[in-house]
Structure formats: C-alpha cells, structure tokens
Image (cartoon, rainbow, N blue to C red; front, side, top):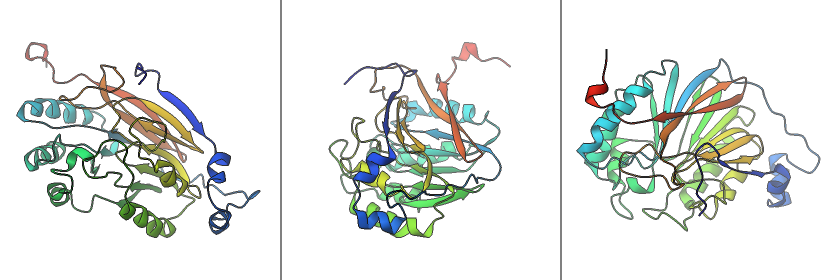
Amino acid sequence: MAVMEPTEPMSHEVTRREALRRIPLATLLGLGLWPGARSARAAAGGEGFTFIVANDLHHLNAECDPWFEALVGQMNRHEDAAFALLVGDLAETGQRGNLVAVRDHFARLRAPVYVQIGNHDYRTASDRTAYEELFPDRINYVFRHAGWQFVGIDSTQGTEWQNTEVQPATLKWLDGTLPTLDASRPTVLFTHFPMASDVSMAPRNADRVLERFLAFNLQGVFCGHWHGLTEHRFHDADVVTNVCCARSRDNHDGSKRKGYWLVQAEAGRLRREFVEFRGPAPVDAITK
C-alpha cells in the first residue's frame, strides 16, 4: 500500500461512459439513459448551507472522553453548520458503553447528528443490537435539507473489514427507495466502506452501489473505513474517504493528521475543506 500525505489525495475518475457500459441495455432504457439520451440535471438546492462529515471515531475507553469533548467543542465553533454526518466506526468494539459515550458527547453538538454503522459498531459478527437501540432508524435511511437529498446506507458485512460485499438487504432497500426520490435533486450518499472500487478495503460490489445512482444528480459520496484521504470521480460526484478522527487509531496512509470535512452546499454543488483536529489542548495552553 502506498503511503500518501493527506494533502495529496488519490484521484481516479470513473467516467459516465465507463459506468454505462457495465449496465444491461434494458436497465438503461428503464432509467431513461439510452445511448444519446441527455439526463436533465436540476441546479436546485435551495439556500446554501454548511455541514460536517467525520469518520472512524473509534471510542475505546474513558481516556477517549477528553478527546471527544474537545472535538465536539471545536465542531461547535462552526456556528453555521446545519448538521453533522458520522460515517461509521463510532466505537472500537461495538460495546454499549462506548456507543453511549459517543451518543452523549455528540448530544452537545449544536446541530442534528446523522450516523451510519461501521464494522466496529458490531459487538460480534452478527450482533449490532446496541447500535440499533441507541441509534434507531439509522441503518438505511433518507433525510432532506434545503432541497438536497441525503442517502445513508449500511455497507457493512458484520465485523469483516476486507473482501466484503454490500449485503442484499441494503441493495434491496436501494432498489425500493431510489424510485421514490427525485432524481433531479442534488443528492449525497454517505456510508462507512469506501465506494470507489480501487480504494483499499472497498466492498467487491461497490461499483454496483454507485451504478444505482446513475440517473441521479449525485454530487458527493462520503465514506470512511480506510483512514486516509482519497478522491475519485463518479460522473458529477467526488467519492471520498478521509483520515480518521480517533484518539485510539492511526491513519492507514501513514499521515499523522486527524480531522473532518467542512462541506459547503451551494447552487447544487459541494465544496469541501479539511479541518484539522489536534486533540485536547494541554492544561497549560488553555487561555481565556
């Protein structure tokens, strides 16, 4: 695995033409994407807004609590943030106490929080009971904000971390839900595992997930799991991962920085900025 500095993300473009070649003609006809057809894209999106995206928090024990207190405090300084996305691995081993701690810390955030499950949020290979009880209706779901659609999906296969597949239940949910959405509206997909197929640890069927959004005005895909900055292109959308935001874990790309995305949505497009988090300030560094 190549070591990268976080200021130079991996980049690869999956063109629309390449993606369309992979889909049967009958499916393309059903989507209105036959050869030569033009798919209208609305420049809609309502008023501009800002949101936060963080991944791989990995709460391990009480020693992580000062880290989380400082992290939420820093996020609260983004006073215009409309909400935050936490895209998986909230805890280290799926223990209820660690998930409760994350829930309670982020209850202090002065904005709604939308979470997604990661493989570390399972207590065992098949037990995610604590996550589901503490974060109800946060497996496969949709929410809307200022004319945008946000689609959160479960990309886990239990506690497995590589050579995985997005499971049939999620694919079935997508196939039943996407036809009920407005394909012209600016849309964001968020999930734990990388959705660019050539990123390390991406599910083997990641491309099949993205192909389901070909008829959509997809503007961004936010993922985690691989702790490092990567950027790929799928038609109009950047498909990205980020460094982790954990005290207890290092980055896979060898970089030392921790942080999160601050994303601006405006005129139907996204612009993102990496915000570094250095952890709690030493006691002797705290000033008025």
